[in-house]
Length: 259
Image (tube, rainbow, N blue to C red; front, side, top):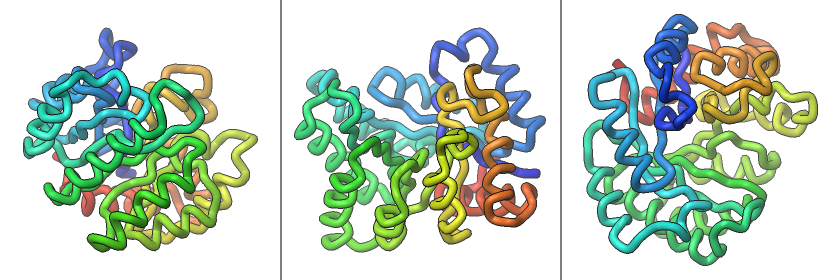
């Protein structure tokens, strides 16, 4: 089985003591690529350093919507410079969040727009966080779509409804599913996952968050993407190996082949 974890935060301090072992377990589970994403300037820098001597890993740089209000003057210029590095294959984590109130919504929108413009200019996909803000994300993406055409990117850890998923797919985006796909209360998410076209489907961990069943409650790590892939395969009536091949091929097209 081959798998590509399209969203992890490997810089997180919860991996500080055993990251080599975490990566070994991922490889043993069939993970052939991991996209590690920063959420602010410091973690974006750390992510680029982390992937430097590990060619099967990829980096994304950006400012998470919940961190946007804390960004210092000049941070964006450094993020944009980091984004040009060939080891950086995506822009983000960016997006909008109405669940938390750590950043004013207009500030989130300003930063989301910056990321979308940078991704388009560099020809790199954008990794989009959306929590209780599907209509807002769709509105901003529609503006860019109407102006520039299809948007390369990922709706990360998708938990929205089928109608918005259809809008995002129509604008060119991929849809990625994380550990919540395995949770008892996630019937709506599973229904969406069963219907996403195969060529737009991705899997992820969002490690160290959202550990899937049967690892729920533990620190999540890239090896556990196999549990999400198995649940996705069951939903779609295919084998886990097939889901691995499909989702890895999709990730390779977005980011370039890992390794």
